[in-house]
Figure (tube, helix red, strand yellow):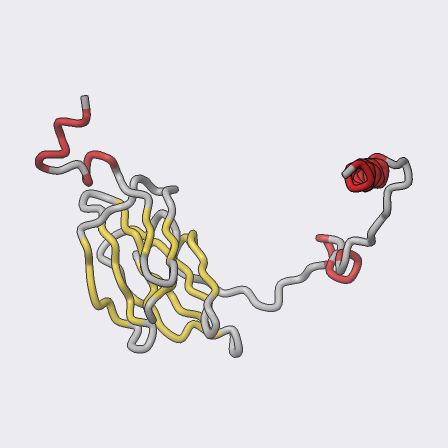
Length: 167
């Protein structure tokens, strides 16, 4: 029993000494030198004009989606050709980001009637407009394997019997 206890104490002491010794092992940060370049050396491959302003950008496997205003639209760019392949007119101003899931682009809309628009990526057509508006222009949206997640406005989701909880 005493021998076993002495072995445990010795092992614990060795572990502490190894962790607190002044000779820290230095590891090279993998890949940093290979990917770092001076910012000034970066040059655009192409410049594409989309609407009056371009705000939200989402990169998918086969497209770059850009939300624009004036007109309110989301434009699909083919990264292989650097060309706009389609422009989907939106019934409001895109805000709060873009997300991709379930074969569709999800576009939150701000304005008088906040909403969430679903654009089918195969047809480039709006397939749904949901009365699920974002909390604000800088809210947020994302997709998981089974859901679309959006930051919503509190007063819009508190309905019926839940309103008594507002205090």
